[in-house]
Length: 300
Image 1 (cartoon, rainbow, N blue to C red):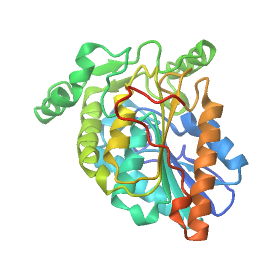
Image 2: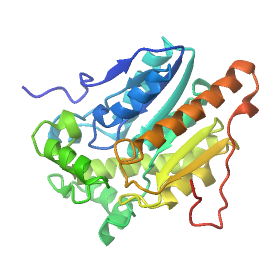
Image 3: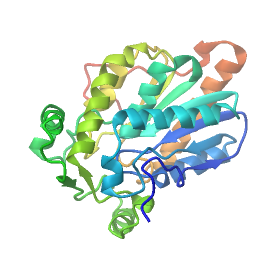
């Protein structure tokens, strides 16, 4: 029996202290891709909710039945659930989940203590992406409006966002097992990509409204989204309390790849410093690490 596109049966929560962290998975992904980071944050004492986006953890048809507005609403509902049991709330996400986290902070900044943007993707311009993928945000939305290519799927291809070969083999095996709740779908429908680009268009113009502290973690070897995706966040938010961390031994899926421990440690350090500022009433306690826009990337 097919699940409802709006099911949240695969979301999970790890109870902890009064500081909460909402984690958002990526497009065609699952809450499972956030599990390692969630456990690390929970061990540090935080309450962590790994949400499930509408249309995910099911079939391609489930995903196609939803829009980016449905994904945004999923984040709002999950954040409200977490905020009911925590005093301070951080919002973070991976890939498109990072874009949704930024979107939530732009809309509901007074409810967000800080944002964790992990490998944000606004353009598919990483080194493994074919040239035509870089044109997606201009080509796919018009095709969807004309209802051209509804059944077309962009198949996942090596290296699947994962540098570690053993982890990659395990994830790819799960991806092709037919159980999408374990490792996501083995491809992305064109129309779902068109929806993502609709979200990206909105968030590109709304990031100036984000004034809370931000942590951006990105790999300089990201195969899906080049380093300019991270620099776009840094150059667009109005917050002066932003930290940009570069990884050097991971690809796109930074929450499960070789430097996942560093992602956890940087996230814990960021949350701890911001929480101290919130508790003391002094927001300047938040970290500041501003990169030079003249450099192509800033060493971690």
